[in-house]
Figure (cartoon, rainbow, N blue to C red):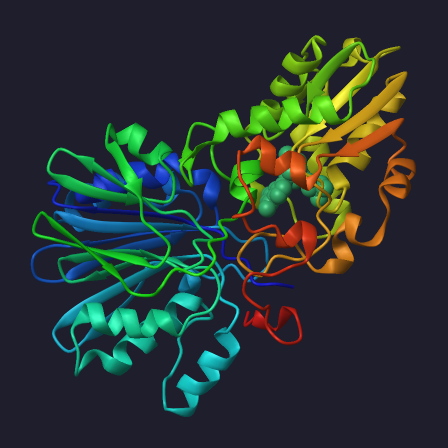
Length: 461
Ligand code: 5GP
Ligand code: MG
């Protein structure tokens, strides 16, 4: 299994209620991770922390926010994982003391050179407490911190990292945010009152009524201290390759990610899909929630009625779905249930944002057939996912990706569909008005940063 580090970051500097703001920032980004949550604040003398397993609302209580996590500078992290290894010690931010300084780091993304870096550090005497990439970053920073400034030590450390990393870092009252030179994962900068805020997605700013200023650029580091922000380029930007899957599935539709409105992008994917693969049918229906926005676009472009004939149970946590196939099938049934009276005798276009293993489609199409659907046409708002992601998306090994091992015709037959169309790569890029500056590795197998030798070796869990 690949290690999964798909997470959410939030930081704030110069606000009387830093912990509470961080709490709400994380709350708005809960979709980015449900496994664990943590907040660190600077109380004027030392760093304080609270971390725990589960949802933001379960990890923090009022006493944590009002009494324990004091201070005007803070940062937080939410972690997503589907592996069995859900450990409290892997919850972030990761915190250490160095001389008279408290240091904390939180990481979103996945590095591809962790095995080499960790081996090198261990050979030089580092002792690791966790299996997280962020601990490696901390050890690298500590190596040069005694003879250089924090900014230089961080720059030197980050230049050694390969792969995806958006990072937040605190050193006493200093808050630092940076993005890898490829810009795989998002990180944006905002302002609320006199405070600066950093977040993975702008939906966190909306909740706090913060103003979105701009994205942190690939290879850029911002250092915020005592109300002032300094920007450094710690690394020349590489060919930028932000993860297009943020726009397809992962980010909230009310966010702006990589300067793009996520909702509009998804709707445009649906419109393109309708032009690429029109079909005569009675109605268009999404598999909610993730398929909703592309389905709206498909319905508007095709002129077909839009129906919510598949209902989502919103109280199903992702953790509920266990990693065995039987449990996954059951999980899909708990999550998605059709409105029976609407299906019989109908010709239906199903719009889904992505097909990974094929579990969702296979089990729900079977159900729709039992309910008497006459024709079922699946339209997927991204190209076939044929290659694993090494930069943090939860795409399992190649063996589990249905499109890696089967042709579109085979998949349609196996899923008992009347027709199946995946959005083309060109159609996807047109929909987000891009030339080629996105990472498309999961569709095309060309990796902007070479994957680790031996494929999935980056797993240390
Ligand atoms: P499948 O059932 O084919 O394995 O997965 C596809 C479904 O999972 C789609 O409904 C899609 O919205 C959703 N999905 C896509 N990527 C991810 C991911 O990284 N994590 C989770 N939990 N769901 C995903
Ligand atoms: Mg979905």
